[in-house]
Image 1: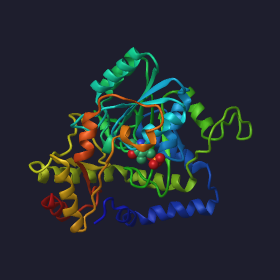
Image 2 (image 1 turned 180 degrees about the vertical axis):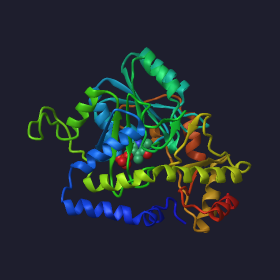
Image 3 (image 1 turned 90 degrees about the horizontal axis):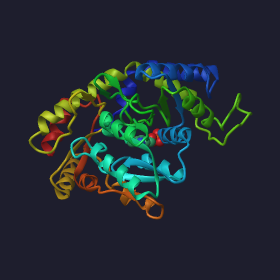
Length: 369
Ligand SMILES: *Cc1c(COP(=O)(O)O)cnc(C)c1O
């Protein structure tokens, strides 16, 4: 059984995807070109924002956004304590300080109340300037942007949406990657919209930031690539990846629907056994992960080993909260009370999740939990 069945997905759409790759190779345009521009336009239209700027991966996308805002030394950037490393990794890269914020026990996403308190604490302490918040759409469900935005506005913080796992999610019909002042996503193969290598994108309605990001991602270019007006980076999406993504975008909604069917089937079977994931009223998840919680670590480990013995993969996303990672041991960080994140790391387990999971497989997994 596959944790995320990319092979079946490919075989279902083989002709279209192979055709797109072949056309790119035949055109011999491997960097930039019409395929990249067309993808950016299609993604911007899909999400409902003015600008989509493609880049090399989801980590660069976060970094490019912080660069556009001029985040740097002395700045505090608020990130959830329970997320993939990248969300916090990019902050010290620019000399700024990550402030780890606790999550909500039901949604796994940044707790708006914990954020409000953390910003207030940092401001009162006065050593750092609260500058930006990066909310993450963890496991496919958008964060609580209505509440988070109130705090961002109250303290004049930039709001970023890390939609690496959230692409395809919605709040009241509005699509993920439209909720931040700048939003980002990743096209890593296992993400909701994955390509066949690394890829990422930045989304914004702001013309000035879009122009800056287009410059930063190509060596700080000015009017052309050899007129370098700022220190930038090399972060482009390969043309082949853009061609693959354009094809995959055509059947993306179908994939998300399939994942929603699987999630509903899991929840029906597991509701009385474990704590199943909560999707807030009016929210839609793209189900990057289906993550359940056990009452303690021992039960989690026992369930994982029962699955393993039956040849069923499961994963612990994430085993450590950000504040406990070795990488942050010797750099300045700021931790508020993150009890829920710690507890979640001990008790969570992510189950196989993809649109091609069979009812019989869902039954088997559910019986073993
Ligand atoms: C995967 C991921 C990223 C980074 O994306 P890459 O394309 O792998 O660099 C950032 N944030 C979150 C929440 C992710 O899950």
